[in-house]
Amino acid sequence: MNAVAVATAGPLLRLSGVRKTFPGVLAVGGATLEIRGGEVHALVGENGAGKSTLIKVITGAHRPDAGRVELRGEPLAPSSPADARRAGIAAIYQEHSLVPALSARENLFLGRGSGLARVDRRQELRSAAEALSRLGARFDPETPVRRLSVAERQIVEIARALLLEASVLILDEPTAALSPHEVDRLFDVLGELSRRGVGILYISHRLDEVFRLAARVTVMRDGVTLGTWGIAELSRAELIERMVGRPLGQEFPKVRAPIGEVLLEVRGLSGGRVRDVSLTVRRGEVLGVAGLVGAGRTEAARLIFGADPRAAGELFLRGRKVSIGSPRDAIDLGICLLTEDRKAEGLLLRRSCLENFALPNLGRWSRRGWLRLGLERAAFARRAAELGLTLASPAQPAGELSGGNQQKLLLARWLERDAEVVMLDEPTRGVDVGARVELYRLMNALAAAGKAIIMISSELPELLGMSDRIAVMREGRVTGEIAGAASATQEQVLAMAVR
Image 1 (cartoon, helix red, strand yellow):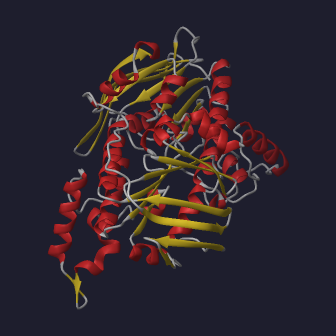
Image 2 (cartoon, rainbow, N blue to C red; image 1 turned 135 degrees about the horizontal axis):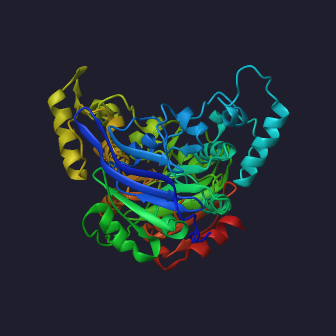
């Protein structure tokens, strides 16, 4: 879909002088924004810029301390998200809000009934199937959400907002877990909605999507909207500089040492939806793994890590066959996994950064059953400085960190274990452009230190920009491999992913 060029003359939704503070924190210090009917309007900025708070003001989750919000020229002051939905504003948040024990259908219609009328399950099923089909979903609407992948859950979230038939649709990182094909389907739907006059506010760190989709873009930094520009007025580099407040340099800095010998070899790996996968990764190499959602990329990483049981296959580390029956076995061998869903599977969000860092490393600082706290704190301070981890203190809860700093915290944990094989599943999901470049530089440093990196990503520019080789998966199998990824194209990768 190309940027929407035609929109209604007057703003559908207008914010002026909006401010919101929390104890000791100025989250939004002055925001002005206008969304027109029939327009896709992008809102960009680094993590912490105030975008999420601004969305919550619009949707009634937060009350502004100052400023004005108008819908169709009339004051809008929703006291709750339910009020905002009744006014015709629907939002898809970056963090999923689904009930895992309920089916996709039940989640789509949760909270929409009066509590008095009888539920027409057949009609719900038809509507759910239609909404999910529009987004290219291939799963049964009666599937429990707990059995869906992260990407499939995101599709349910998007379908739920579509079913509300809102006049204003807000999407916060909607494609973070979607494949290129699913992104195309979503963009087709957004194009259809904008042609019907729906005003769409699109928040994303994926700037290629912003330039492809939006007619105008507003930049936020440090709680303030810096301005709004027509998308054709800015280059990618100019937009990044406005977001971060400084020139960023090369977006995919790939400068590494020569690639060494094979460190990890996988032969005939099978289990779940993974079938007969074989691959190798060398010291100093970044092996990218591409594929559509459901291709088996995450499942293959979990099998290597021992998180799921293998039906078949052999693993060789430094040329020696190894047995991995659990994540503990993999960790002891120097293999680590940064999971796709870092908040649900990687971190204990309410525990401190220090505790999260220490979890797999306690044995390193223990003696005769006693934990030597000084050694633990010193190790954390060393790794935090090495990775540029930004936090208030080691006691800060991990859930309060930005996405980029959460990834750094997980990396710090595994580097302290001296992991040699680092598997990164969607490493920049929900991470702003400045933090992404920092993570890419960390990947370069790890590769230069002789680590072997396996990077699973749905972002083709990221795969092409950072990988030395790319293995492409489809329906649980490796369908091809691209050597010299820097000279490859997105079309080559997609052709292997769908053939």
